[in-house]
Image 1 (cartoon, helix red, strand yellow):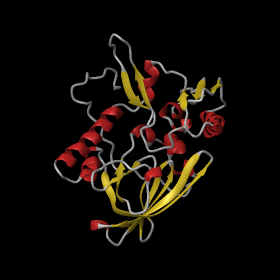
Image 2: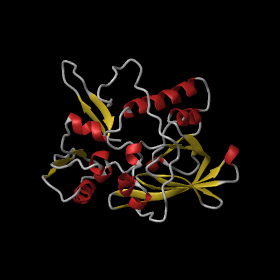
Image 3: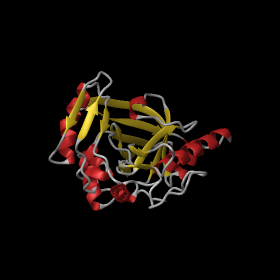
Image 4: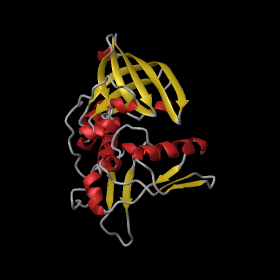
Length: 272
């Protein structure tokens, strides 16, 4: 998730919001809401801890910026800092996903409260995010490869509890893209909705690179913000953008705007 924060000292009005409120490859700049809705990304810069720096003054499109910088990021060890053209307040109000930090805070708080009360943490997280538990079971197979700077692959799970006798297959590219339940390969969720894996016992997040045989995992589905489900957004962040041209996006659930974190000032202009 890319968070935008503007701070001054002494304290002034500030912005805490997101340009990528979905489970999408973190360096896919053409998939940010600013790029989707026509805001320029250049000039842009990429840098690593070794002192290497690259600046792109102009690019033909956001997708071209990604093509130019992706090989550099791979050469830097697949870990680099990125900065793009700043946006003014009026532009940000049009393209950012508001209350994204509040949502993250509420999901973590729900997990912490459930753990303390010895309740079902995955269910509490799903409820706090306006989604649902898609599957519960054990990881039985993980296929992973790195191509083009992305970690691509699939994992297979065998169900337990209410999901006993069923299987789940998740395909991922750095982040989870599609979730199919078997037998029958029934599509449960797809990008841009969030497909989140957490430890079944405590709700701790499990990234794609952390998946391993024997891990007990709950798979949660959380709805994407409406800015990511418009026709123009789905061209960039929908299943077809990842090569799944025959998969049609179906909204998992209605998105509910998170309430601001208690005790923080109410934002003006509709952006937190």
